Image (tube, rainbow, N blue to C red; front, side, top):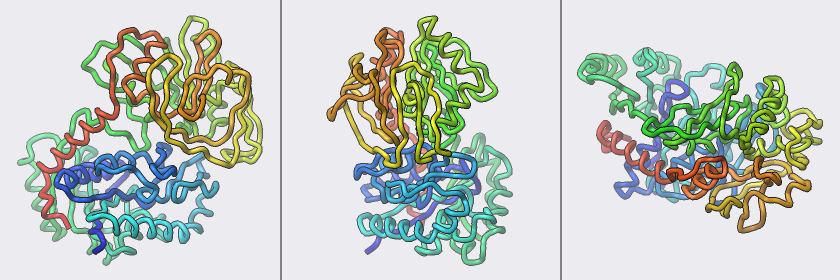
Length: 478
């Protein structure tokens, strides 16, 4: 028998779809149910490398962990990675198929839907349950034609839908009733009920509203999830800025919030480190003093280099280095450290070459082939690291004679002769406790308190599942 498929859709972006899928997945996994996560189409610049060597959305990699599974390309068959306000790289079954504007992708949706249906069929054949996460809201009128992310998929596979709404934003009943009003009759019938997310206070004060909603819609409220203070799961896209407040920060780490930042989840381990004050510097902020500056990944390296120069980051970085601060570039940030970044094929933007920051003797050429690999190794500063590489282009130059990481398949990155500047293609290098300690020691934090990102994520999934089971009767769900 094929798996029972249940889809979680939201009244808006960030209503709690990813969180609810992860919580339900872990709760069913704890009960011995073979459950798998699935998101037909995801737009995100946070990605991961699956066990079968493809690129998938980071949220589905976390949900796979909730299910006790290694992530596969079938869990995230279509990933859209914006490189500009009007264009994006489209990834299908883990491989980039090209850059498309909105109009071209709309025409491509028929092909994308075939890939989505094939992935869902494989997951359904191998598991008892498939938990599907929608994207944004199903009530976006302008996106309904050819939809593969929300009701278009639910109608195609004939699965029930639970609608989740965020009460913390206010207007929760209007969110739900308004969404239902904009659905077709068949789509409205498909909605089995609701979950209200992020509730704070006395639930008795909410009961009259819940009773009205059930009477008005004829559909049940399956549960009300509480506000979970300090829940730390990787953000699907938006930068998470909250930090642990139970320690005494001894190191300041500064990171520019690039317009096309990718895999900013690389910095989550620092955000959760009790001795680190992680400061995201947005377009309207002025960078200040720091022990370590990290240049993060970018989906459009040349455009983000221009952004840094426009805001004086090149001068700020040189001043930071004169005062003895450390500088680390990750993936696109690593490419920025060299003498130039060339994109002759126009993979990320219009073809051309942009001068880099000139801090390492390197040159990078962006090419059409994307390098995808899960890797492990040791930092030159000591400390085991484990992570993944997702990048277009290759880097050459004399600085590679001093690699920053020794991986099982060879060296990676570069470090300056004075040990002050380093770059690497390795994502997730702060996630292992040993690697994080070694990197922070290199940056000047002696006797750091180890933070194990994997252990934190596991504990948070358990806490989330506890809350889900307390709020929702899983046996009532379709």
